[in-house]
Length: 201
Image (tube, rainbow, N blue to C red):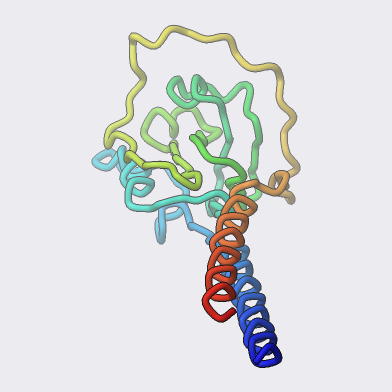
């Protein structure tokens, strides 16, 4: 009888290991690439559609580890602070790209702000606010018509930021979002294995 229980426990352990390995692969491979603006890409919106990027962001759900692909001609894309986004200020970007095709990895939960390097394009709606969801983050879509708010007090500009080489996208440190997800799956799986082993013994 003990050999039978040991064999059952060994079978459950092997199945649990395979389950954990497949779940880890699913969490790691779950990242996606979003083409900003879909087929229109990253360009100055038409006069009648200045909220197109707000609407685009509202239709999508972004998770830590996902990436944004910006495709554009004769333009650029800048990652900026909140102040730079609302005031279309392109003087102190966090990162700058001008190679026509840029990939940006969303490496943390929270807001990311992007504007065109051309201030007029930004004022006409070529700016994007992306809210990246964490593990337990509830998403509220961005407002449909984002305009500079007169009641926002001017905040100090961030210190000068380096411009990123056009050939390279930022390479952020690995996010902890996948680690938390994997840890949660591991804990649930271990509880399951313990319960099954208890029942079998």
